[in-house]
Length: 172
Image 1 (tube, rainbow, N blue to C red):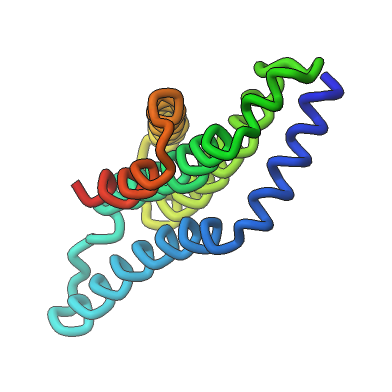
Image 2 (image 1 turned 90 degrees about the horizontal axis):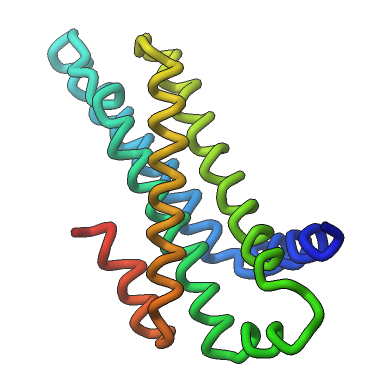
């Protein structure tokens, strides 16, 4: 338990040190929300009725945000740890690899929950019904994207390939 807490602190510091990746994830999430809101406002000012693009775009915003966390903040750091030998060095210590991964996944899942909470507040403000179903769907979708990021991280060893996949997969 103590090693998991220490690993969580280390992962949090590492995430803060890599500010560009965190900023890219946060800005892509906020920028997509602002884009949909801006188009809604523009169309509403021209036609006096809102098309509801922001309301209909919540799944796309969620998927994009969760993929950014799964690939940029999960896949790339784990492949970097492997390529620089951090994971090999960890195997020679008394710390358990499970606590390393639990701490790593816990921080990423907290970010997924923060994005899901933001989208739930937005959905409530937009009058979306079935908030409980939406919350479950968002959390399960975020967990699915994180597991996909961990699956790719387990298979990849080349950091360049991981970076390319992190930026290409969301576009596909």
